[in-house]
Image (cartoon, rainbow, N blue to C red; front, side):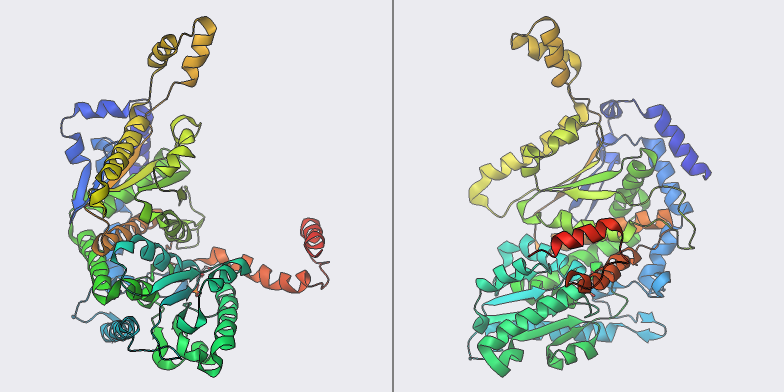
Length: 536
Ligand SMILES: O=P(O)(O)OC[C@H]1O[C@](O)(CO)[C@@H](O)[C@@H]1O
């Protein structure tokens, strides 16, 4: 353990039982434990981090090389060491013209060219200039992809519903035939465009769903089925094998990781839904957050602070999970999106140099929109035996001015939850309630115990003006950089994902066994389950 980790642990050991509320005796607490970035505001004053801990955490970031590593990422160094790749999803959204080179080659011209091609295609589909096989306009789009080729566009398309003025967008990811079947059943192949999105164009789920969709198009359109296809991939050879015309393929480079890819062609469905101008706003929001991350001083740097709070909760307080709680129904898919972003990036057990990590890395990320979550799992947040740092998100302004009362109630609920988590309810307060309700003696004690809230449970709140394309870009880039900060402090490579390989290999080997081939090489449990599943 370095000195700083030790000092942080000492700080926590002495402050462990201190009520978070007591920290507000400092009149500047709210101002000094919050920060803003172009309208997005982070309040982390409802945590047990005090001034000493905050300054130690900032020192820790320096000591672990977060700032140097950040600059290396933006510069295009090959920081994804295990795959020997640069990490430059930020180049997809910066619109810059000064050269940015990877191995001596300027990446900007190709980025600009692809963006222009996407825009032209999106404009032509939206205007009806590109026609269906039968000469009409496309009314529906199905994006077939999984993981990073699905979660980002699916989340963003839902988030930006008020800006939709293009074809309806649908998403198919699961290899479970139920999803594609239910989707195709409600659509007409004669007016549907199918985008096959896969960075590698080898992912078995996506290839299987693509085959099914192409068969569906073929049955209705014959040889003209290809008029209804487009692809998003780094593998142009494979898209050609599937019969997709080269001018319908939108490529990107290996320096864009799957879970960081919605800023480029993987975001085509978003662009089709909200139009190129809206998509530009989305990119601009993300770029504004990139600039903030690179230039804001540490005590005001929102992604850095968010990452440091994450480190405090994970490593110093030893909390194993974090809850993402958007008080914004249109961000319903944000927790799922962040699960991939965070857990695929930082769910690692070895450091970049191959050593086993000395301390815990990425927490389990989960969540649901409020207020629905309140009526499901918040019981555990308030009174369970585990402490779950909670991350609330809420817009100042909704898109429904005529439903102001709804938004007022949503805000009140959001604030009430973080307040309740922090202040709790003492046994004495609970006893008074029990007395009012007529309980006496031991019955009163039991009732009071059950109605006591320990409180002192930490949370952060992210407030943004309104869920616009610009703001959504800011929020997603903020979380990307937060994941980056945490990964850098842990010394791991946040940009590979070897942990998904083994299951894929074993699934491929199991397919023949599902169909009846010998399973003698398998363990008894797998053999037993195979026997059960082979029954019709
Ligand atoms: O875009 P592709 O190559 O189909 O990959 C889909 C997803 O699969 C993964 O490789 C994990 O299996 C993710 O990292 C990725 O986003």
